[in-house]
Amino acid sequence: TATDRLLLEDPRPAGFEIDQVLPAGVERPWTLSAEARDDRAVFFIEDLDSGDTVIEYLLRPEVPGAWTSLPATVTGMYDPAKTARSGEARLRIVP
Image (tube, rainbow, N blue to C red):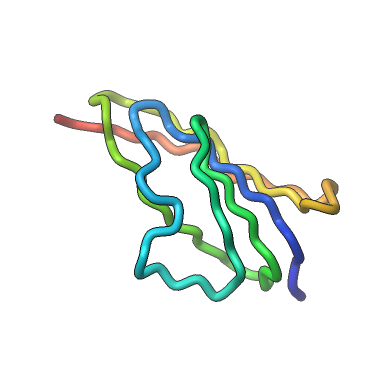
């Protein structure tokens, strides 16, 4: 079954800047719009089919070091009971 109108928020990891939220050449089999905000990337998704979904966007490394990326969250825009969260990730920027 499809899920309608989801909001995905992915916090920007320290040490990185968001370069492009909708890079060219990425296949998107669903309706998607996005915004880059100061502290996160935000995606608005319509009609998402069940199963695995990958959303790709570009980050630019800025500050060398070891960083932690906080979990992304997804909620139903009109049904906040629909919610999910990713795991966190450890990232390293080397000069």
